[in-house]
Length: 73
Image 1 (cartoon, one colour):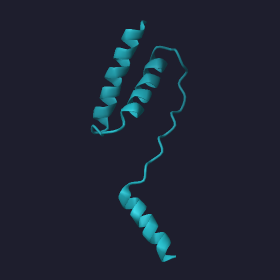
Image 2 (image 1 turned 45 degrees about the horizontal axis):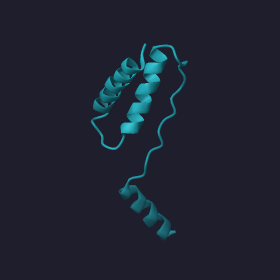
Image 3 (image 1 turned 180 degrees about the vertical axis):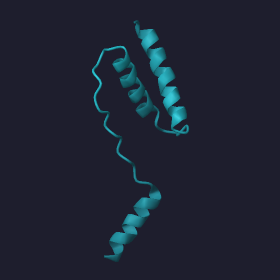
Image 4 (image 1 turned 90 degrees about the horizontal axis):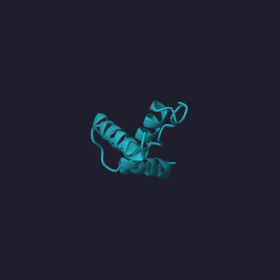
């Protein structure tokens, strides 16, 4: 397969992942990386292994709760 075809497959898969996750903003890189990995496994370039889960980011609300809880101590 050529590079252009690989990139097209990755782009289409990244778009599908984005839609599956409810079209969130700001996660383009994560979707592209996941799609790249899935395509590389599919075409046999890399072996399948467990994908690390992305670390959850704390929301502003949860940061405020944490700060308030720490202040009460």
